Image 1 (cartoon, rainbow, N blue to C red):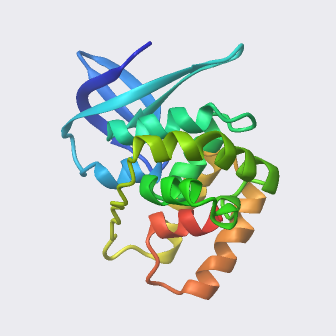
Image 2 (cartoon, rainbow, N blue to C red; image 1 turned 180 degrees about the vertical axis):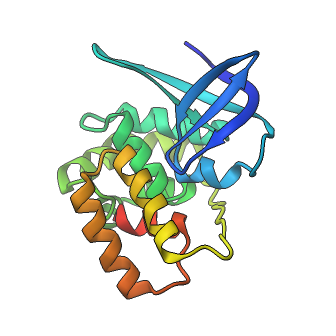
Amino acid sequence: MIAYIDGKLTYKDHAYVVIDVNGVGYEMKISLQTYSALQEGNERCKLFTYLSIKEDSHTLFGFKELDEKMLFLDLLSVSGIGPSTALVMLSSLSSGEIRHALMNEDVKTIQSIKGIGAKTAQRAIIDLKDKLRKENMLSGSSTATTIFGVSNTKVKNEALAALVTLGIPKNVAEKSLEAILKKEGDDVTVEQLIKLALR
């Protein structure tokens, strides 16, 4: 198991990053929480990681905060929630909001996340509420990044690329984004657009 990767951030996208460690580039899928916490430019950064090994792929997931990785692992322990779904959850709501919803048995909030049905939401609550209450780790700090001077087309294209990377079919994502942009107008950021599309 790779616990973390510490190196130079060479590429940053809403859905993944590449970190160079001594000439080797590690590609990691990330949530919007981690995206927002990372600065622009070739900064040195450390991401806590989870390696998902499947028959046909090895996928690294990166987290800026250990707290987010721990919640990710908690979500993976729930039957019906895989790494991609857990990442969508962490991109839709902050870690604090997810914990709060699980501890307070708020099925509606958990179910508002794309890909989470009533049964999965209830199972997540049953499996995790007592564990989270016992840990008493409710910390609702969400970071929002504002993008200045970005055209609607660029915002839409970036959001579309991130949604497709997260596993949403392109045609479904496009329709969803167009509807949101009509409703929200020009002041929406890429992060907000992705969050709204995941609900």
